[in-house]
Length: 344
Ligand SMILES: [Zn+2]
Image (cartoon, rainbow, N blue to C red; front, side, top):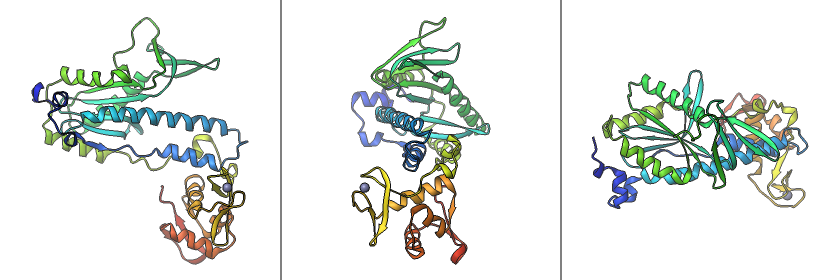
């Protein structure tokens, strides 16, 4: 067991540890594939499409969520040490589905799940009904109570721990990161559940947990081993089926190559350059976004002809050069050659 005065957190308070020794982020947050898919879909969806406005709302929500997660990443990274390991956005299998944990901290004393919510406004939380409500623009929006959400993550992690013989206790926190949030408990319990806090309280809560739960269940080397086992059990965040999510088919998508300046599919291959037909701007990598969109939304394999139809290119030789420059894996030869998606 590590005594409190030798505890890394105590050392931070005393300023006796060098900061670089304390950085130990096992798994770093990567750009969200879901957000990337939504933004790419938005480029190929006509603005008049019935789901356009819902898609823009979801993009805005995901950006806001990312902002909250990054605030929490920054706040807790100061705790990181050989005995405080951090996973950012960890996804594990659980009961035929998955659990996604925004922040997972592993210490010799406990594991801590932190769920981040970057919602603003007046939120009413009712644990008995299992719901959270917000009034916005005269409408009531209803969400799953975040403690129930994080309890499912806890259950999934417990299941995983049991499977690998780990007896580390698991605690959980839900952090509301938006400065303009007002939290109110509803139902027979007048107080918010103890797992819920505002961003400003987060580091105090983590320090309290470390003070209150200082019985060591693991040695430092066992903690490293547990961390590696969890990494081996993780599901990589590689593909998100956005077409299924919104019930779309290929006929919903507009073909072409996007101009970042005009915000339209207005680029054409002209005089050996990808050039916008409206603003004349050139961007020789612009076609890669359209190829990615084809792979993500239409098919994980495409032929030269399919690529030409989607990008609006006439010459098979030009298209072949573009596809080769992307270093894609291929199957088949000559006319039957298919280029394979690196995203599946
Ligand atoms: Zn343009």
